[in-house]
Image (cartoon, rainbow, N blue to C red; front, side, top):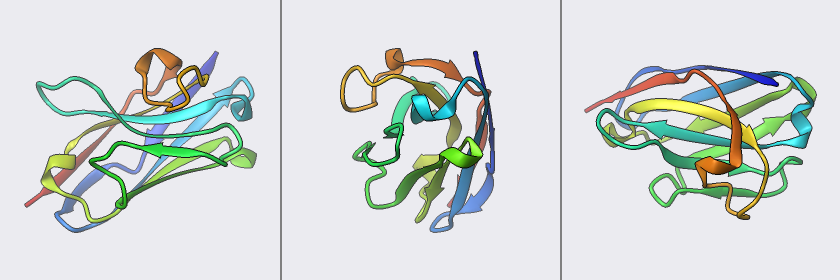
Length: 125
């Protein structure tokens, strides 16, 4: 079992930045792929970014490439999502998740076994 707690969400103006954190406890964090997903009202949960267990490989949704950066610190059992140049369409609840690499892209929800409760990000125009 892995417990995940997200933090760092809030309200920011368009063009601003936020850094989300995902703190893990329980089983060995370094064994897992970490993903960030988001869900806007009335929409399905969608992939944002994923990172390999050792941090050497990442993948991003096209909508956030060049603006968001995923990283992890395995010594601290924590993953991060740095979000820059935020847009109103980035408004959503952001979830972190851990799992295993089946697809090579880290983008499928089915690859993730454990999820956090989410943190709200609101970008005002």
